[in-house]
Length: 251
Figure 1 (spheres, helix red, strand yellow):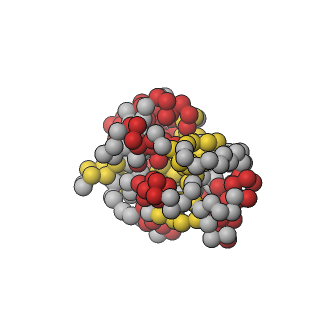
Figure 2 (cartoon, one colour):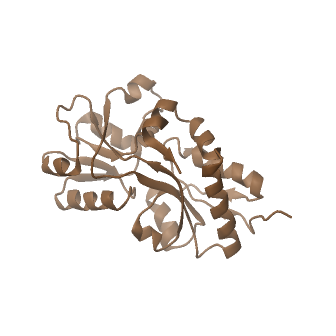
Figure 3 (cartoon, rainbow, N blue to C red):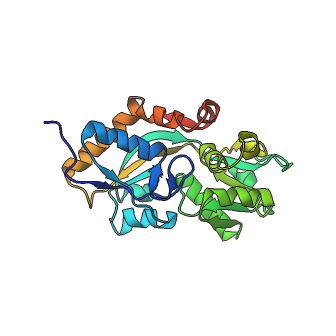
């Protein structure tokens, strides 16, 4: 008999653009769709409790109420607490309004632009270099943390902040709701920021809440979904090719 999960796997979620879409009790999007597909082939049931974004990391890394944390970006602090399964790489871009005259090409120039403020989503992490940049901006009181992606877009357009740093796929998807493609993205500039490497994104698998057999099964299934095209198909259902081409590099 094929190996199967020993129990239902808990994957708390919060709205994250097209990656995780929540409408009432309905949870879908790139990663819920992918896990359900894995569930069919591996005889695993996944449940998706909907919680505020700020609670996701706490439930997984601190209270151990979650079995999987995904999509999750990798950093050294998280690696000490759980097993990471790399699935793709995303490019954190400097995002500004096109009407913003200044062009910033690297982290040093961004820090030197002391009049610029940022809006960032609370609890997001795009690697150790990103974390170091956030600490510097915090020390200079130049960053406002918000609870969701849509608020980032609203703050940029209202002129309350000058920039954010995100993979373009995330902000693109958050701004699509109720707007045309041109309205949603046409006024934003996406620029690569030298000094911020691509961020490894995938899933963290709990060592505390899962049996060793379930850990192994989930690690192999998630890595396999990145290799065999399942993840790409899930991404293509939600994102246009031009957005994926400039942002996503599969493992």
